[in-house]
Amino acid sequence: MSLTTAPVTFGQLSVIRDLELSAPDEQSDGNLTAVYPLPDGTTAEAATTAWSALVERHEALRTVYDRAPAEPLQTVQPFRPFRLDRVELPDGSRASAEVLAEEMAAREIRVETEHSWRAVVATHAGTPSHLVCVLHHLAVDAAACALLEAELRTLLAGGSLGTQPVPQPVQLALAQRAQERQRRRTVEYWLKAWEGFVEEDRTAGDTSPRVRAGLYSEAAMTAALRLSERLRISVQSVVLGASAIALFRLKGRQRVTFGLVAGNRNDPRWDTLVSSLNQLAPMTVAAEPGAHPDEVLRSVYRAGLERLLHGSYSMDELRERLTAVGHPNPDPVLFGCYFNFLGEIAETPEPGSPLLDGIEWAPTAWQASPGFNLRVATGAGLQLSLTTSRDYLAPELTGAYLAAVEAVLVRTADGAPDTLDQIDHAPLRRVDQYPGSEK
Image (cartoon, rainbow, N blue to C red; front, side, top):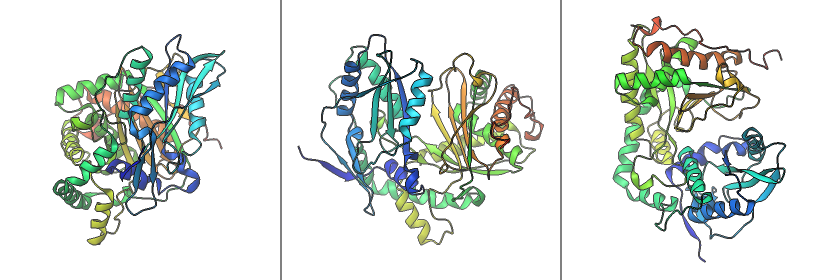
């Protein structure tokens, strides 16, 4: 069977260029984890059969990449049957499966020669409990992971995915390169937008240790929905605006440039594409202390929507144009402040989790991640996960910042504060000391 080779998509190109900022021993930064619970009675063979069907269905799961040429290439390989290994866990909990996933993700996937995933069937007392996967960001984004989980559930329940062909990354890559006029217009848009970015937020080389913390709040979710309905703007822009307001107070600033992550699934042709469509759609949020919170949130919505509509572009073409006009910082990857809205994937924490009434501190965080990287998921509650560098934010302030975002949302939901400086940022929850602060 012949192989299919084509240029990479704009989203894949963004991942490749981002990984070039990481050291050789940090290439596992591109690994994402996925833990899929298996229904009672599922055998290891049934789990393997279901996962095999997805690998055969989606070309991104059997693609290798050549990153050496000036324009990287992807090559789709034919499907070959395989068998998943089994790994015995000390118990059948999701927490144990997630620990295994993190251990598996610590080893680099060599995308030049390996398919962009590895998976095992996790068992307890010999009984399968979870399918534990590591997927490279070249193959998936958050939306693709959710799609794979939904299809896996269908297959494990005995259902069918139908016979209609699904879109593939090579098709998207060729379509993007065929739209020359749109490509030029989008690059011109970003060329102009680059003039308004805060240079302080366009940094690289921050190697100070990272701190990672999480927060889950049903009160913040309720408040975000109320603000969204009252102001007729998206929940995403509400949370982004509240995040900026909290950061203004903590950093003593009035302007912040966020590397807003665009999902780029606006075109229904690519809704069911398993690949990474994510790219940066940077935007600056600015507000005076005397500004009305509602107007700040509305302005964030308008600016964010415009940026997201221009979120699909060739990073290499933009870099060439920025260099040609003599921009002092022409690398489209270099942003130190990220905001990534993951959508409806937040899960209610298990009883006893510190996320329910406090801050959960994670033991490790990628050194190559941005100095400020906020990930947001929605569900019954709002889930915030923040990675910060010590040079950007003191470790003890990382948890305080998350609590401040919650406080800003809750205390502005009824429209009471007239100005930003009147918003009470005091935490509504316990903010424990960062566990490494004594070291």
